[in-house]
Image (cartoon, rainbow, N blue to C red):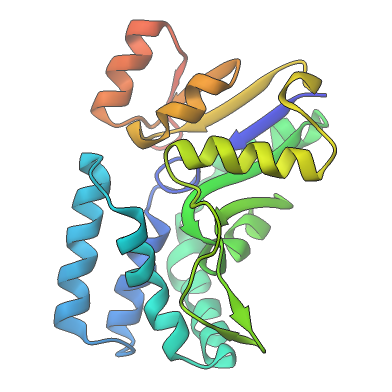
Length: 221
């Protein structure tokens, strides 16, 4: 069996799902629009620059989830999926995932974005397994905390290892391990797999991929 891992934002999707979720909350009037919009832009720039403080970002991202009732969050997310995510899913991305699923590969999305935002997106791609920032819930209410290791940078390697162990697998069990990502932030996991694929890569990742002879793939025109 082979292992196929996919980053989500700007890899399978031509958008950043947590950035767009925050913009959606601003447009819906569910957060302090001016402050929240400014912080959302700041965190997105820091992510692109490779300087993001993941703990600070998760506090920001999960704060609104803790402030709203779960039924309202689910209603908002359904609207978000319909108006933002579904129109962004491209045939080429679906075809890539289906290629691995039909081959019988073990597939997972591995993303720094939290599981509340990304679980329905993983389902939309037909991917059962999701490794994202954990979202703590107590008695059906999101607390705003993200326990455990964030699935970010080196943390993605640790979280994949943990997930595989729970399934009774190890890295060496697979004939081929593949990871698709656009971001320099994912270099640790790209270096861990046997077949790293720079997918819609940022400038720094593309330079590394060209230097090391990694495949470069573009899913979006």
